[in-house]
Length: 139
Image (cartoon, rainbow, N blue to C red; front, side):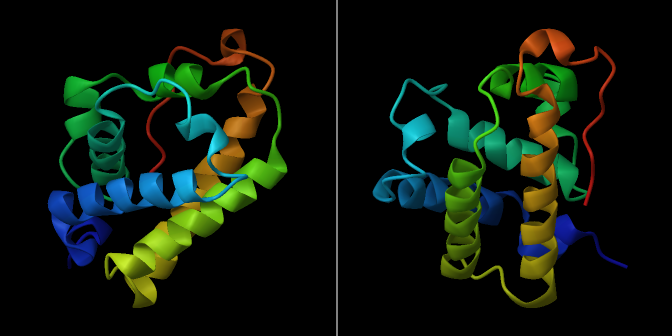
């Protein structure tokens, strides 16, 4: 039995997905907003590491970048922005297709990313709401 991480093609494929998603978001007038500001210089690598862990691969994110609580705090406090979320999720689905993550694996990754995006809304009012002991939700 393989993991979803293996089914999508591993870290290099997830890094390509992260970079493609970033580019597609910048091309979209609604999705571009969070990407037009100063992001961490290794945002794409960090997202790929996070997805690696969430999809059943090695613990690259927690071994090198932080834990779920720290990741949620970075994204917290921006209010609820459903239109932005939907634009970014649409771009994510297009990025999946462009890098060749399709079929059942693509649908599962898309569903995971949608769930994770919507879950971030619980901390929309600020990082102070994020508990210290969160673990990465896996697909």
